[in-house]
Image (tube, rainbow, N blue to C red; front, side, top):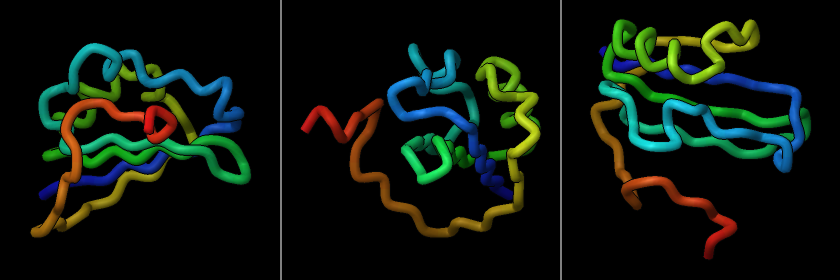
Length: 92
């Protein structure tokens, strides 16, 4: 079963710092990570292959103790990844 973790942080997009575990390579078990600005701050969305992989990856992210994170089972039998690797919309 896959799991989705949604994290909302109170920060401006200009102040947002990507999780340090993702600045070099994706941790084992991470299917997708996305982040973007919201009206209240920044939202991060992670999809993991298992809770065990999420726990290991989150420990390296710097956001593992965020109290405003939601983790739910996420059955995703269909997914389309349009691009691989890190990508910033601002780069286009």
